[in-house]
Image (cartoon, one colour):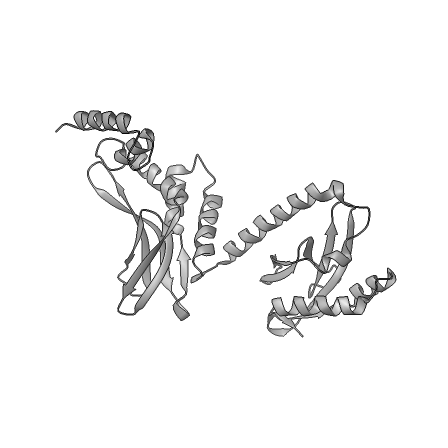
Length: 296
């Protein structure tokens, strides 16, 4: 049976039934084109496959071997196979080309301690650069893709780039929310309220290394101008252009920090805040419990 006849019959069937498996006629034809030789060029097929990998929702994939069983959430239409190295797993996507089927390596999963996996997406990034580089920002798209996988797979290990990307995304969101709130804020600081706010992860880096802290929303961390070994936690109120120091984080050996809230206590006292000492102690307790790199 010729390809033209196959396509004619499929189009006729789709037109009559409204699609296949609930999909539109266009979606049904696109699915078929991914699977029939000559329907698309190899380059178009690979472009389509990469878009699917990046955009498909995740599904649960269970893998079992003699060393144990593992649960992963990976993009639809992908699967996991074992590499020759017993500690390396591959997430692959089979793309149908004109004369063959090619495996696109979506990610390498290297097994580490306690059955945690290092997520390597360099090969996928190469594919995105090669075939979609003119259409999208490949770096951001890969980081966004990694974030989806890392959020769903708690047995994956985050890299420095992943942590920084998440921090930037959250910071941008909080800044937008705060800007929308400004017209409704009275001309006064929110220091007392800040102590009650939930904590979010803030990634901060200096010339030595990258640090992760959990701090109240509408605050940020900066370096003390007088000492590179002291970080300042400040309340940043964009609405009234007010900055107030909440705490000092004094660097100790082994990347530990001492929490100093003397300035906060003086500030609340000067404003006549009732029970200011108890409020500071409550804040310190929440802050210390969440940040394991702080010394009590």
